[in-house]
Length: 223
Image (cartoon, rainbow, N blue to C red):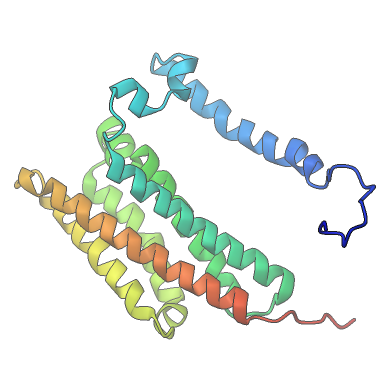
C-alpha cells in the first residue's frame, strides 16, 4: 500500500520551489560566486582551481581535517538558528526568542565565513596589513553587543552552562592566538580548544532549536 492509501496519485512531480530556486537562490549564488571568481583571477587563479578541493590539490584527505570539522559545525550552528527563526516567524512571530535566533544565525554565519576564508588572520592581517589589535577590536564590538543584548536569552536557559563552556574554550583559543608567536608550540592547543568551543556552541544551539520546535505551538492571527 502506498502513501496515498492504495490510490495511485495522478499528480505530476512536485514543482513547488523550482521558481524560487531559479529566480532567487541561483541569482544569490551568482552574486556570491562572481566576486570570488574575480578575486581569484586577480590572484592568478584559474577557474578549475577555484572548484578543486584542497584534499585533491594537496594529495591527502587529512590535511586540515579538523579545520573542516570546525567549519561544518559553524555552518550547522547557523542552520539550527535559521531553522528556529523561520519556524518562529511562521508560528509565533511574537515569540521572545525569535530575534535572538536571528542574531545568533547572523553571528554564527559570520564566524563560519571568517573561519572558512581565514579572514581575520590572513585576509585582514597578512594581506591587508591591519594590526591584530585592530582586527580584534573589529570583531569584539559585535560579539560584545550580542552578549550584552541577549544576556537573558543566553543565561536564563536550563543548559546555559553549555554556552559558558563554549565561551571558555573559544576565549582560551583566542588568548593563545595572541601569544602563539612567542610560544609556537601552542598552535595545536589553540586549534584543539577552538574545536572544543565550536562543538559546545553547536550543541547549545541545537538544543535551543529543538526546544523551540518541539514546545512552541502556532499562534492564531486575529484580524
